[in-house]
Image 1 (tube, rainbow over the protein chains, first blue to last red):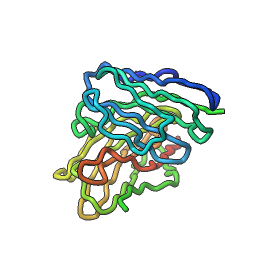
Image 2: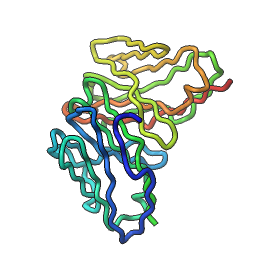
Image 3: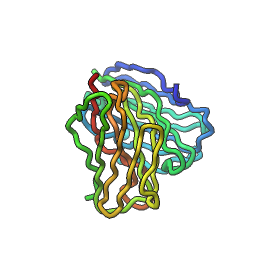
Amino acid sequence: ETGVTQTPRHLVMGMTNKKSLKCEQHLGHNAMYWYKQSAKKPLELMFVYSLEERVENNSVPSRFSPECPNSSHLFLHLHTLQPEDSALYLCASSQDLRGRVDGYTFGSGTRLTVV
Amino acid sequence: SQKIEQNSEALNIQEGKTATLTCNYTNYSPAYLQWYRQDPGRGPVFLLLIRENEKEKRKERLKVTFDTTLKQSLFHITASQPADSATYLCALPLWAGNMLTFGGGTRLMVKP
């Protein structure tokens, strides 16, 4: 356990479903991130929150909707996804924005399959 | 455009040897660079951070160098073990104010 917990670990959903991914950290970190990792592609940054405020949204389709209710929790709400959205979704946190002190701490990820 | 280059081909070495992985980047000179380890189906794990004013950094069997002239970082694992087999990612900001951008990683296979 890294200190960043993601649930569920695996998720299979239909294209018309609505689901949410959850991320929780109790490291006292101030920044949280969502990344997407598709097969044979580098990690892609999706969203960044700093002190509960969204500071970056990397042209992510609106079918992905983040929510950060407090500094310890981060959600990714999913609706009407496409099969190409199937990937490993990773949550990370860091003490400072951009991880300049001691890097990012990642969760184990949610393996999402859209059918 | 700015990018990070890591050898996409797997590196196969014999146990006990030193593994050396390369991370090259273009254009912007970052203030720091990081290395992560990722096992299949898991999130990356932070290993080391090296700043632009540091030529070399060590942690146990790991050593990282940072050559801002060559725009290159080298990651060494000495006395490698089969348990070191994983994908290793470098990460750095590609421009001032940028969040961390990750390279595609190099897969290391250490054979007994």
